[in-house]
Length: 247
Image 1 (tube, one colour):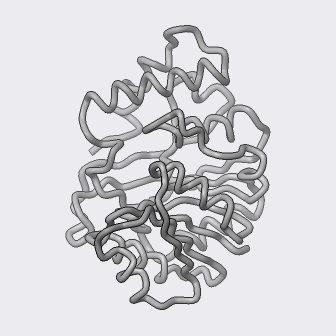
Image 2 (image 1 turned 90 degrees about the vertical axis):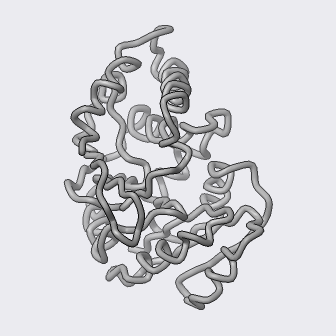
Image 3 (image 1 turned 90 degrees about the horizontal axis):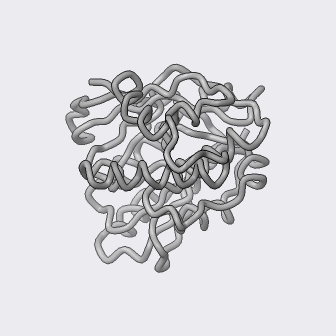
């Protein structure tokens, strides 16, 4: 099974080397990394080119943000399965993609856990996001898996379609909701850490971003699941963080 890893980047020279190194260390042999760069103005592309690996493809052009770049990745990946690795994150260890491939042998979607770290030199752990088992009404109960630890077969990506760019910071939530709650794809939770996520991205920038994101997630549930103006998940998402994300 060939697994494609799509990495959206923009001015990522400080971290993308760690990201690429963690991909190249993966023991799973049939893999590609597709780097979708948003016309970086720093040394990002020079770092990418310095690896000179046939398993890495890269292109650079202006885009409309990270989810637009991810949509471009959907149209260009060549693997049997696909997932996304941020340009400031790394795989947790060398066996992640091998475990993903094994999990996808009898599933359409696999996902796991995520470590939140301060940086990729010390790997100092701040929090852990445990994916947990998906059930039919999980999204209505405030559940969501970590997007960087979410891999799907090609047929899932083709069926679900693009990320909805109207969700500025939560298009990944909307996408996973559509993939899991609106279809009968076989989903498997692998209870192991997939990714070391460096704290400081758009999704971890304070209470204001969290509240706006929660409102956008509610909009997704109202659009796709028929949720009321305010539903239980609006409050349970905060409560679940105590159990799903913990130091």
